[in-house]
Amino acid sequence: MAFLIGGANSAADTGFSVANSCRFNDGSSDDLTRTQDSTNPTNGYKYSFSTWIKRGALGAVMTLLGNYKADNEVGYIHFNANDFLEVYDFQGSGPDLNYTTDMKFKDISSWYNIVVSVDGTRSANARCKIYVNGSQVTCSSTVDTGGLLGIQYADATNGLRIGSRGSSGGTIGYLDGYMAETIYIDGEGLAPTDFGEFNSDSPTIWQPIDVSGLTFGNNGFYLDYEDSSALGADVSGNSNNLTVNNLAATDQTTDTPTNNFATLNPLVPNATTFSEGNTKFTNSSGANWRVALSTIAASAGKWYCEVKITEIGGGSQIGVADMNNLPASLATDIGSASWSWSYNSSDGNKRHSAGNGGSSFGDSFTTDDVMGIAMDIDNYKLYFAKNGTWQDSGDPTSGATGTGSAFDLDAGGAYAFGFTSNDAGTDPVLDINYGNPSYANSSDAADANGYGAFEYAPPSGYLALCTKNLGSDGG
Image (cartoon, rainbow, N blue to C red; front, side):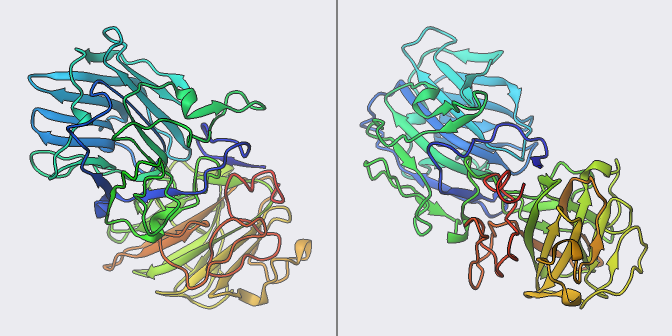
């Protein structure tokens, strides 16, 4: 089987399928903006906001929806620095709404559906309702006066924003992560069942539904992110398109709530700097080795990923780690201990429970090389490729024979793809492609099930590490 580390709600592969999401990187100030029609909202006291979100980082203010007109006219929905969700609306002399959830949002491996339903005609302390994966969450900290909602308004300078908000000092609160099925309803405070449903076969799993029949209101919009050349395109029928800022076509991904892909896991002890939706690994920590592991591990099946060496720095290792035997401290490199197996950049050696030496295996690799990793957990074999050529004349399709395999893995392990790098004066950068690269391939190749976009075709029988492949040919 394969499983998510942390593994909370991820929608099942039934019913409505979400094709695309948008990847936001806080370090490059990615967002979407629009000047709302402040003179003609459908209803200035009612709105609904729904989006699916997969977080990329924790412990910082990150905005889902926000606007700013002046210091006393501001509204936003954001994760605060303590990882609670906060809904804030200030219009005039004090906040009209200020709701903070009791729930923390600490899962970076799975998708959440967040619905904020606001209706100024409801009774006090019920005007704002927040739902997560179909269920209402409690908010012990609330302010609720029922005043006019500033979030419905924005001026030409700052506008309404997805993935950030304005302030007197400029734009702040940039989002790090993925958004899908982003919907803004002007004029109604809707229920979560207008945006999703519980799976009939797995009634604890919340999944998206077709929302095209909703009434969106004058200022409403629906972003499905299916046009990579216009990620802010409104498909509600209103043509309330949002302006794209610092997002590229490669920020459209197929990592969605109905097909959740592996990413790098920032919660792993001693991890380092991740970006681009946890697909880019930069070690700027000095000479120390840093470990990066995937958010999905597998204990059966055949799985493939690629690593683009964007900057080699002081050296890198690529390989796998057994999550069943992971130590508390990872201040080391892949391959140096019994829980990991690796292929080393500087000398092409393979390493398992070895110091700096290891044993001869393949070619060295460096900046601009694209490395492939194929792990056959059915037969406990591990293979490596450099620029499409399997090292040591490897044949990942050879099954139990293991022709050219780098290692025999331990039986019974749960294996995550793993990577380490060494700064040594030049920051190494590894771009990890589990099937949704943050860079453009020269030619995209999918696995046999049609998932993923790789530089080189995965070997026959090997799949991208994503939830639609879990339980399929991959076991």
